[in-house]
Image (cartoon, rainbow, N blue to C red; front, side, top):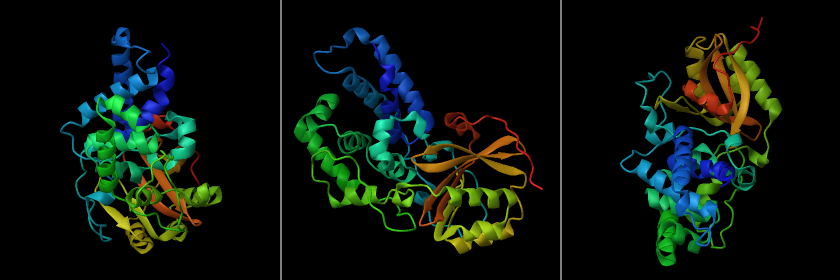
Length: 333
């Protein structure tokens, strides 16, 4: 049976459910192994292989989420830090929503629902109880019918509709991205979307106008590698944010970021950035320090400025993004 062809959309589903690239990959692998072991029980008369795989994946995710703490972004854990505040102790890895590279996802699905794999939206999904999360993703993101979801979860259409309504009401709106107002939606399911759902998806951050300002990115990389604080700050939106998982510490506002950068000296001297696969449409870079992997950097853009800088101090992410575990680049003079 050709089950491997369903891997990309299973990865996207499990990622939205679990909030972690690491766990999503593990969940999909476990799904395919379980499917292979129980292949004699698959009945094509009762449903498609896709529906069967999604049912297995749902159960795998629900099992993983049993008793698990909610994953989050730094902004969900507390208020912005004041400049001069120590970083504090790192927070354990299972706390964080981790990015997933776009190349692991189904291209057709990504083309119409990229906002639903952005960090802010995935973090918002983690507020929902697992079963509500599954129903909302299947119905409002992947456009499954209520009957299809009911069959997958072995419940009634009425129960699915009730669960979906509760999920839509509970889903919080992610923090809006600085910059021009923009509008995005998830694929239509045929049901009238309510205000909370529209607000949540519309606030998912991304480049304004659906494009990426490559000149802006090139200027940011140049300023970063020279550690030109004045040039870096000039590229930031006045309400830009900066965060650095695994630390809960984060900054809000261009002036706060400027003050921290000025006071920090040159902690990233010798670092350089290597462009890699986007994550939810966000430009993403591997940061190398003295040739060794140091951090994965995601840049939010909008209105001709940098709206967010999220720096994951987690070299384990490098292989997911196709980045080598060692690199070299000519030093600037």
